[in-house]
Length: 99
Image (cartoon, rainbow, N blue to C red; front, side, top):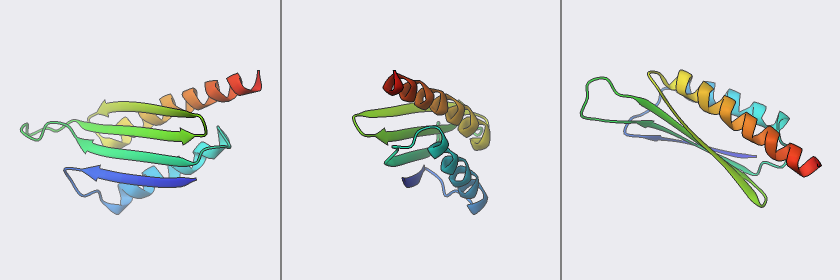
């Protein structure tokens, strides 16, 4: 599984990158055919003093992909929401294959 983490409009600290990496490594327990995971960490509106944090996760599986986007006040909260949603998608896709 190839993992790519990209930040848009800011430089992420190592603590945030480690948090994301550690969570993403758990994805293989939900689906064993994941080839690539792309994560985008973005700051929504740059003109406002309080920026919304946006997390996008794209997972590539042979013949099917999963995508989810979440927005919150912190990257950790947004990532947790996106991660929960993407794991549900993976479980449903794996159940369809099994049936």
